[in-house]
Image 1 (cartoon, rainbow, N blue to C red):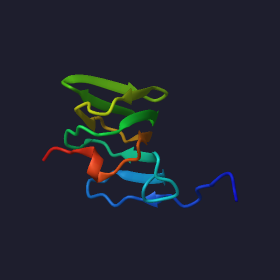
Image 2 (tube, rainbow, N blue to C red):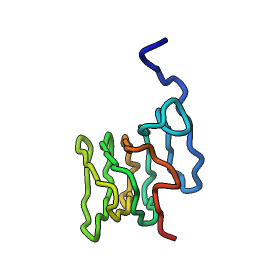
Image 3 (cartoon, rainbow, N blue to C red):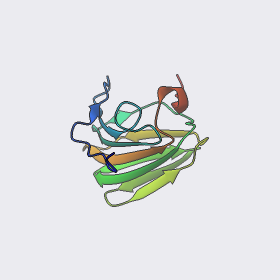
Image 4 (spheres, rainbow, N blue to C red):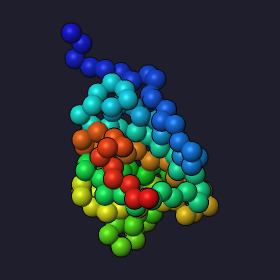
Amino acid sequence: MKKYNIQKAPFIVPTTDGKLIEEHFGLASIVSELSIARMIAPAKWSEPFQTPKFDEYTYIIKGKKQFNIDGEVLVLEAGQSIKILKGTRVQYSNPFDEACEYIAVCLPAFSMDLVNREQ
């Protein structure tokens, strides 16, 4: 039995908002305990508030990303990272003029059943 898995073909999550999501590990790919995805949020992108049932770690590779965490607005830039605890109301956005590339890690793995997005 192999003691490792190399991901050569991440699952591309279908989206309707222009955001690229490449899930390298998670429920749609090799493992389900956590999810690791490379994402590119286009300029002027945003999504609804959510209160997920997973911890989410974000590492910014390029650009900037805005976080509205329980009403506190933060902006992270390339080289910065954040951990947001499960049960926290948060909105992710990129109101800036350039795309933002980042890595997101969710524990347990991201699923629509756990994200609790607002309408």
